[in-house]
Image 1 (tube, rainbow, N blue to C red):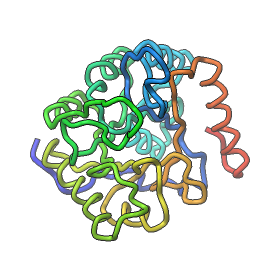
Image 2: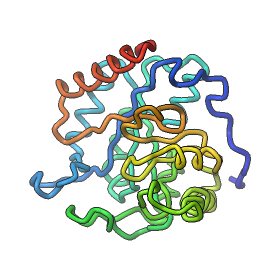
Image 3: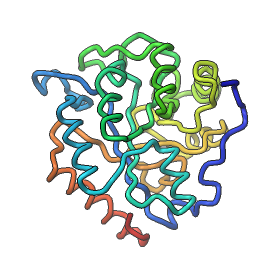
Image 4: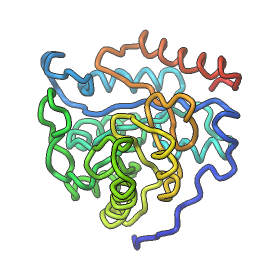
Length: 260
């Protein structure tokens, strides 16, 4: 497919997120077997069995996991009922081998946020955790060809709130251009490394041409370029997922918006 530098329409008619409930977006990282929680001090790993159980729980509740781009387009068109955003941060190689087959099994899609400045290396920013290999260029292309959305996580997994304006522009625009070269499509979504975002960074993401961005708990910055997400861990069985979904809906209600 030839590269198309024109951004696809995304939620252009949507009301601001403060005027309606923020969508429920789940945040994953790595999916692989591990023997002991001590091996995963940052809580970023779920086993394939845990992911299978969590996806099954979603389906049993009449929910379908989709990438964030699809979720926002559906909301803009009034067709988002029953949709939940699924995101996977960092672009670990195990997404291709362990997460994607399960997503296909349940008929779900997701957004994978990758680091085109760290292709095929490992997660050097996680000082205490185990080394996890990141996807190569070929792996990212394979994920995109499988119908999954590719978004940018920046170039090098830096805390963007601490870098200069020049470095910030390179992290945002440079990563976007590299991903266009890799996949033939400009990514529409961005994910803040560590979830850290401030007004300067959110504005730079918008100026770089991204149609949306994912954070974790952005507080007053919450909106299309600082979407809150719910972290999902190995410990999240049916009861904990129910609590997290309920908590998400209650937070929307306390802000004076319609629950999702």
